Length: 251
Image (cartoon, rainbow, N blue to C red):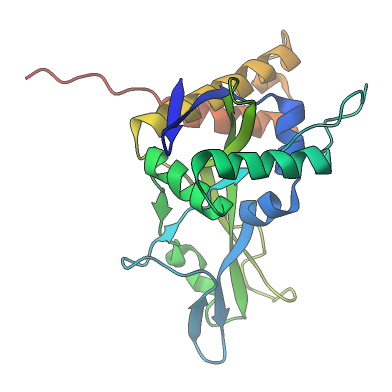
């Protein structure tokens, strides 16, 4: 698959687990993956958005673009960023696509993939309103893909949200109130474009194949109930179903 950013063609490839882990560990990506979106003031009985909502009061889901050039020769150690080459690659990406900032690169990606949106499920947290101050967090599970142009020796990585979950935190435990983490409404985001659907399918398929290889003859149901791989396979399977092309309807 290829996409074009400002007339520059990039091959799209899913990212394997070791590199995906290194990319998701970047501080900027971690902030995008878990961020506050709403705060409630019990005394004022009023809430405030922590991010700017769209006109219909929905939120644009976080997306991202980053550059990562790995250090060579680190046998047995996960990929680590080579700062100098990474900075140089970033400069070359900006020059190639005619952008001044990576925000402009992200805008070019968004024109291809669309920007998913979702409203905060306020009703799930309403029982807290007369009990305590609280903050609603948005957690995003990203599909990670590489955008590569071999002829120009260019490489960047794009992060597309697939599953989002809302949760809350309080400053201190409150008797009779919902415990942080006890309410976690989650949603699989529908892809906004055909390109976004194909890209996310590639990423999810890669992760499912890796999980299958890791589990071997084990089935997810054979795993301990608290084994995180069980939940991961379940989430990936649910997203995979949503990303399947819908059959054409007869006229």
